[in-house]
Length: 141
Image (spheres, rainbow, N blue to C red):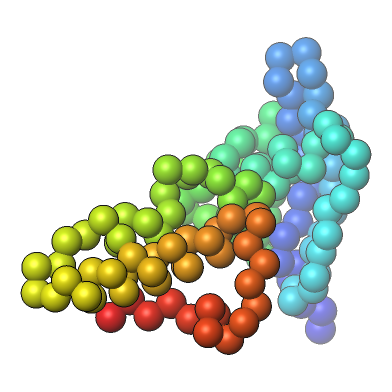
């Protein structure tokens, strides 16, 4: 007996005014498989993923997660996770706020937190290249 596909799109189309971003796409992603969606800029990859995640609704067609048709469901009611491609989605957020806390019980601990915060926040930087074991831990205690 074959397993139900984890994701199935049936004749999915998405139009934005006169632009057809996705045109009658049908695909099945088998249960437990690894799947890559590749193509040139503007071919509908992101729009397709946004429809699967529930951030966009298809103009036509159906989207199934397992046996459940989810085309009309909002994103928070789908059993799908999203990882955005830009690490700078919230550029104001990093580990540095921990360094600005004033620890009234111990001035030296405050300095240690600042050092840990700087080291850990550097990991979010695309230029962070440190691989030494002493810099591979964040200990906030």
